[in-house]
Image (cartoon, rainbow, N blue to C red; front, side, top):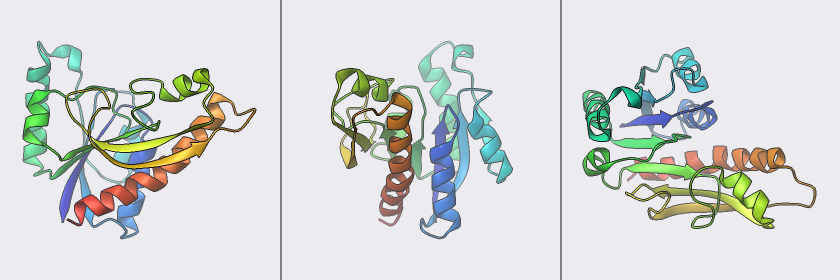
Length: 188
């Protein structure tokens, strides 16, 4: 069975969707550890409530990004992680982790990449007045949301949709699409 590490910085709704799919037997894998860079993130309680270990790192406490990632890599190696799943993790992955997990780090992004990469993709789409946005799952490379695309799903933006309404639509698609993609990855 494949072992996953979920990296998250926030509420953990994608973590929950993945965990629920595993529990239902839809994904043949286990989440072995959650890596978090925010000591007050909601994902911490979600993971602890289902007995998944959480390791929090405060990146500012490290001299370099490489030093930070070496410690993270040690945790991943200790847990014998096969795939790193980014689920609302708000940091760029550096050379140390990219080298160790080439083509095994996956991210979900709330836009149809290459449109609206980086932070606040929902706000960017709203400000641009686009009629369609969506969700992208992609492999992580050294760029910001530039890795090879694995799957995408479009979402229509209707007249009168607020940023909150768009974000809600995106979350619903993320919670459906990400588990499907992970299921395919771990079954290879």
